[in-house]
Image (cartoon, rainbow, N blue to C red; front, side, top):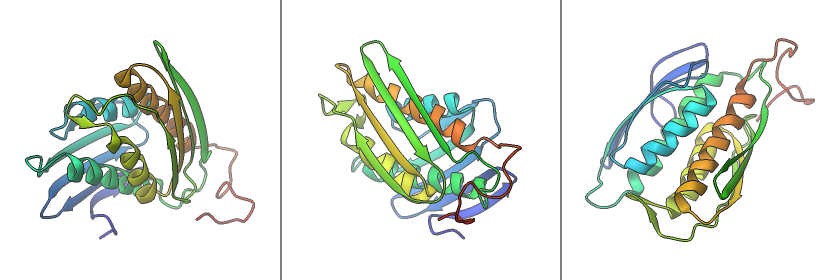
Length: 205
């Protein structure tokens, strides 16, 4: 049992995490050394789109099955999926030895440009600067994007800095998640030259 949910299966660089509460039922399977294959069903279409984009560009294989109290609003489902995804990343990384640890990427989408810089070294923090103009994209309240990235960072032990500018909210959000995917791809990559963890302290966290 992790703090977020139950590890129902795991292996080298992959994990399945399940979380069950009175608000949501979520199962996430994450494979870091994948090809970008996804099957994501959260009940919030634009959120599915963003997670699909992130995994595709990270080259993660990702399955998300989520049901939640969407009759109330989208908050619990969106937040809990981010928490379980972060927990799956943390479990998949194990002791985080041998990985590059840091990654960064910038992605344009028409008039929008977003950048993401990450440290998967066990230090949870999020700084998000995505100035959306509207309230929603599809069924996803755009205010939840900040919260999604914060929840993912906290559960995953990841420092996330994401920023961008654009006139179209769909483009800006999608560019941000694509950039996050590419940054994560670089950060979790195994460097054969690296012995132990990427820290002069000799430990992470």
